[in-house]
Image (tube, rainbow, N blue to C red):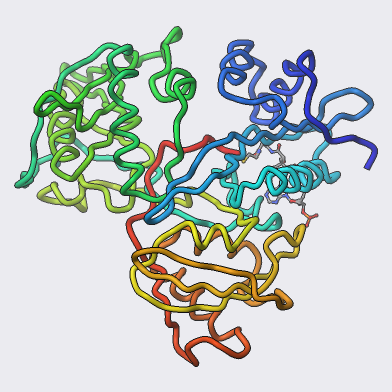
Length: 411
Ligand SMILES: CC(C)(COP(=O)(O)OP(=O)(O)OC[C@H]1O[C@@H](n2cnc3c(N)ncnc32)[C@H](O)[C@@H]1OP(=O)(O)O)[C@@H](O)C(=O)NCCC(=O)NCCS
């Protein structure tokens, strides 16, 4: 290994972002450097430098991530890339080693990312924490809705400025109900949430912003584009929904009614939708909504006690977990968790942290609901020595829904 890993200097930022663009098969867009630096912190970036030449990049946003019943400070891993000329010589491994060391030093108990390719990050201790539908596609002809008893609110097309003012409160309200969503700074909203649209995608409109309002408050919103197209004199266009969020099912139902009412298109495609998508409960024929399930957020626990204590649990119980961490060892150890709907207490009890759950699994109990997490709890419980509740899985880990999109871009 002949390269060094460190934060890029101010004058090296263009090279840093250039590496990331090239790694993803794009040329450097100078706006990207400027935009990125509006909500990145230079000292949270890492470059790999070979004889002064930047060959690898990685960054870590600072935000809080919602977990069931709570929120944890989290490093949002991003801008990961290595030049095609320098791959498979350990550059990513060196970047991940240093990044995890820093995240632990910053006191952030978890790190999270969306992976460009699923197999990359398990070796660094990341585990799948949420899943979603990457895409939900519906021919408009099959968009007949059953209606929703609680549908409410009135949609209104708003300006970008109005969206920037009203939407963050909706996001925060939803974050309180759903695990896996990160805090969004004002700069984040400006760059990514409601981006200025200097350039149009060929064939597509710019973004439309629609707010759903009730009693003078914004209770939901959607950001979408329209592709206008005609075939044989018939509309053959598409609505692409990039974000649609309501503070409850009734608000989401009203937003879907609005989207399916957009005329002169024959198809609606929505991206990064939660597994409990409201639309599926509204359609007369939900099978017609063609879904592409996918992994979503990968999570890496660095401080299991803080991560497990930071969430709430559906039932009262006590569990001893033995966590193995063969990349850095940050999470390794044995932890006693006493938890319930009202709160949790977790402490290290000392122990080997011998492998039980397998690589990459430590990311799961922090966020996940559902079978795999329960299975993991069962395995971890069987792996304990002494104490505990003897032979059964005492602590249901399920709580709240997981999933949803709108998080960090691919690491
Ligand atoms: C993914 C990427 C960053 C890997 O960088 P790298 O410097 O070649 O990685 P390393 O040499 O440190 O490889 C570490 C290990 O990961 C494996 N690995 C790397 N990329 C992988 C991939 N895409 N899929 C599966 N395994 C991968 C390597 O084979 C190696 O395995 P080993 O330890 O068993 O030998 C690089 O290929 C890249 O920039 N890809 C395009 C952009 C991208 O996808 N970035 C990630 C965004 S989330």
